[in-house]
Length: 71
Ligand SMILES: [Zn+2]
Image 1 (cartoon, rainbow, N blue to C red):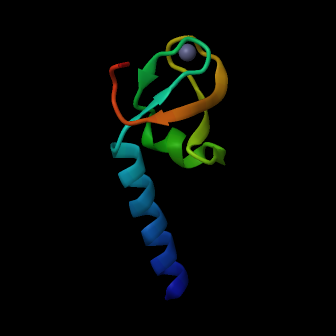
Image 2 (cartoon, helix red, strand yellow):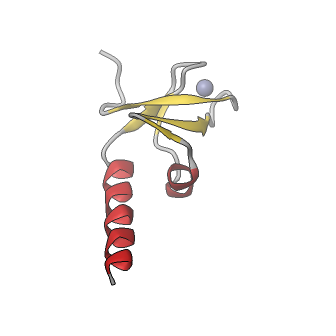
Image 3 (spheres, protein in one colour):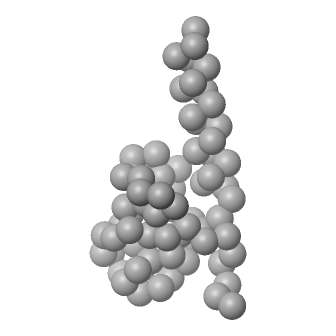
């Protein structure tokens, strides 16, 4: 029962994280929202995730950002 609860909370947390912002590509600087599947599968390191950029196609640690526009 506790395991199920933890799994549900982890899913909710991931969904909130997924919906709350964007990831910035370290190679080309584009900001985008990755797919839910990509976020769940990605290696996690602090606020960065190892993702493949849909713009330049390179893998890297994408930093989490809250806005789409650069200030
Ligand atoms: Zn890129």
